[in-house]
Image 1 (cartoon, rainbow over the protein chains, first blue to last red):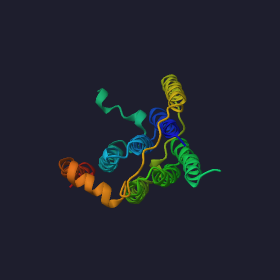
Image 2 (image 1 turned 60 degrees about the horizontal axis):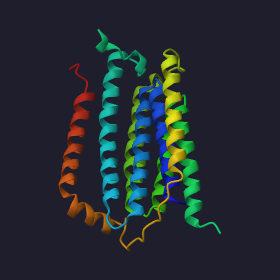
Image 3 (image 1 turned 180 degrees about the horizontal axis):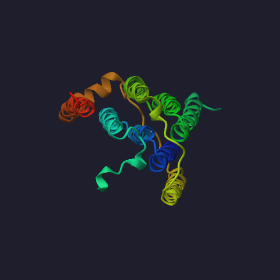
Length: 100
Length: 167
């Protein structure tokens, strides 16, 4: 398996996440789609680090991406709960309060 | 002769794609969370084929252990309202964004699939706790401290946002 296979797979996984984020109405599933996209970037970082294993730069970056993704999930779910308290739904098509 | 690494890669790649598709297509959020779990565990297996043992363990701990559990807690907290009906409205923009995404992914993945570089020779401590830990604590010490403050701020911010303001 060459490095190109990993890159192609990562782009497919990123596309799955992007398609889910753009088309779904459910805020929970949109947040999960963001996690899919962040994970696919980690695959790219690790694959390139494996091509040049003289240093650990790619793995260090992937480590920070995991930490940021955890922070993002916590804050995103808190915003979701606050939004649910206001609107009694988590449908993002109804998130129109800033329009008025 | 197919190497064990190839078998592991193909298996985890199939499970990662199936898990991702379940996540984005499931009607019920709990099924989507299980799809995300399948995706994350199979990606942790894929990290092993890239000699990233510590990151595979961290992926299981942080994602499967914390993030997915957080999602499941929120699904339980919200209850039946966590399920939103089928896609309706804004069909044109949704179809257009889906078509653009598929076109970009096809173009990028087919061109990247031919990219080939030989794998480098790995040293003994590549990707282990010792090797990656030395890299983090010697070359990336300041970003590491900053990320710990980021996590602290995220925790406080999540509590502040999600707290009820009725009292």
